[in-house]
Image 1: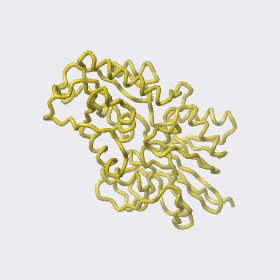
Image 2: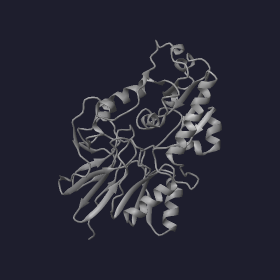
Image 3: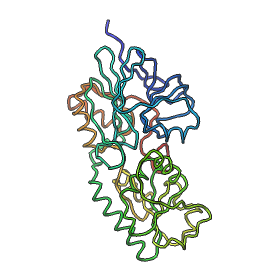
Image 4: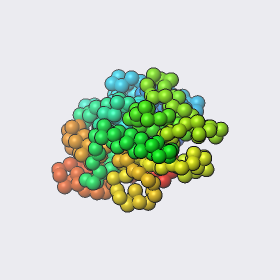
Length: 337
């Protein structure tokens, strides 16, 4: 009789029987191992949490009082009969792939990941394994990211052009990860950087754990926009066009997302600009990662699952779609990010 798989896919989440724990579960469980702090991966209601030391501050900020243990990257923790370690995923600060080894069989649950080093998140480290669980948020050949330095030039040129004609530049981005990455890309010599409360609250948490971010001004309801000419305002996508945003007068709106690669999405958003930048791997990044793992068995959890899985199968991998409640990168609201 063949041994049971190290990880199985259940209605609560990804389960390890050898250690009696779940990875990023979406239903309340006793023990949850968490890849990162975004809300579709780190949910409330679990009895015990395990995550990287770098992920825990944001998790506590978002989830409130939780019973949680932090571990350094690379340290091996024995849980039951399983050997578990966390390795950088490059997605947002503190994000991790979770490596689980049982009796010589190795599985890696990657959560969300990005292969380009962004100067903010811990750089992605591919892990050799027999079984690899991957996202496919941008699992189509059309999604191919340009270098971050190029996007930074485009972003700062747009901001400078807005400032030159007296417009406030509004930039929509998720409050955890994307917003801070954009902050590190901005040229503060152009003007002041203002932040929505959701972004500023996350900035405060990350700064407190030693992450260096440029100076920002919290754009409260009482702020006088006239005191900050030439400003760029960084806010969740849902805040753009709101009553709060309209008080800043003449402005241009831009969105920063991998979805800006698609012309139809750019038109539907009705923004003035779209910057193609994502904290998820692009098509080539997904394929390169899968090759680097050496895994023959690939499990695709969210995104363009059917198309990406079909491509993998046609090119020699044993791949299948695994239904989950992970969402990846969205645009219409602040989303699960």
